[in-house]
Image (cartoon, rainbow, N blue to C red; front, side, top):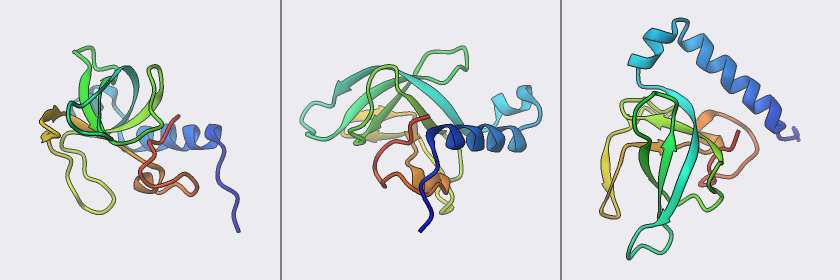
Length: 128
């Protein structure tokens, strides 16, 4: 059985993936993509036991994105992988802005299986 990759190797692989899919930074900013974001705030969604509303800075220079998740491993200052609105996931699904638990969500946190990584559980946010 193959050992799960280390956090550093996942980080390097993600960096390589982002670079190889976006050779020009200006072009990359216009395309929906997987990006690394920093969680700035976490708050519970009223009336929903497992949902949390996050404010995530993805480095776009604008306001942080509001993302609703049920991932319990996310804290303030966590570095997470975000699929932005319009991004196509490995299963062919396109990420859309949607109301989740009555809160507008502007993206999606990715777990390890969504990124094609071995190790890490489904439903737990991929931390980098």
